[in-house]
Image 1 (spheres, rainbow, N blue to C red):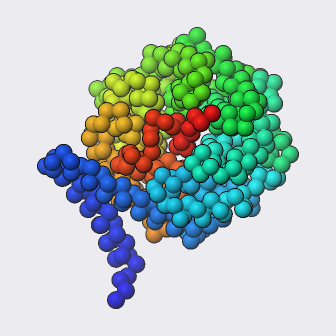
Image 2: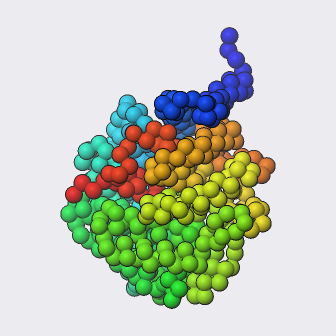
Image 3: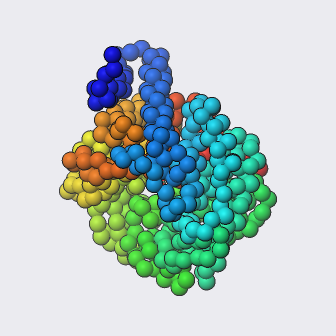
Length: 461
Ligand code: DMJ
């Protein structure tokens, strides 16, 4: 007998949630060895959810950038052209999850179809972190030189972005003509390039790929205020700040992440020095000890004066970076705050006023950062608290964001009204970090540096 689709969906959800809930209760009573079995069961569920979302993408949007999961139709970022954003972003997650047949098919498709000779003006930052990062990790994980060839071709096409008067990159570049546009950028988009271009430089033995983004980083850094803080808007032609608000959220976030990670991956001491000076300023002026916990708010970059008490889903990467730098004290406290933000409405909002504990921007974009931080903290502390967080987050994702075709964003975490988007980073990051939290042995954490899209890069040179 065939069950109605709605009933099937209810049964599937009940099954997933019961695994999450049962293992949640069992943790207190089981013998120590049992937790590994529980974690393995949750990892298997997460993998099954990856398959669910991936099959939805293949059904409705195969050969396109992303799936609109409600309508089950494709969405391409640049009109009729596609850069296969989802398969490129998803490939290394499949390999980590041991989905070898699917990875093989995806790999074959990409090497046959992916081409960058396209008359489209693309966003350098997004294409670098998703596509260039994805191709480089695919090359390092499979050894298939065709991925390195694609990465090199893409890298060359992106390089004109650095031809500005300051050396800081323009926002957009046409992949065929090299024409650039968009002079107002921000620290994240200017400085979240060196892990990818630097890895390409090392693998192709072409220093030019390293030097241009490194110069951009130094140029941005030397424009910091006397407080040591940076703003969140700058004109790459004049070098003047267009917005002097400082924070660790979107627009600045991965600037700090890459300073630390470039020291780790390349042994670049300039990056290490800039990280240490930068994080000292961040801790001095942005960190905010409130009765509700430790948060990182907004401040004026010149005076360090507090301008807003907002924190959000993008800020939630910061505990991971703090943990990676060795500051486990702040990392743990900030992760507790992120989790408080998550549990306020059973899923995190885009931004929260942490002083009032009121939602400031209510959407949820299937973001990974809070999970990434739980994974890093669990790696460094082995504290089951972070598994508890992961179980709660996974259960809430399934309950609120799962649809027939995959997973979708929320328009409001308060009302739980759903939107219609499944960003490619859901495959690259959200599900990868969740899986790795419960199946850490799938990847040797200490031998990789994750780019900001969670593509693992290895120092093989
Ligand atoms: C991802 O594309 C990257 O993590 C980026 O650094 C920030 N935004 C999204 C995920 O939220």
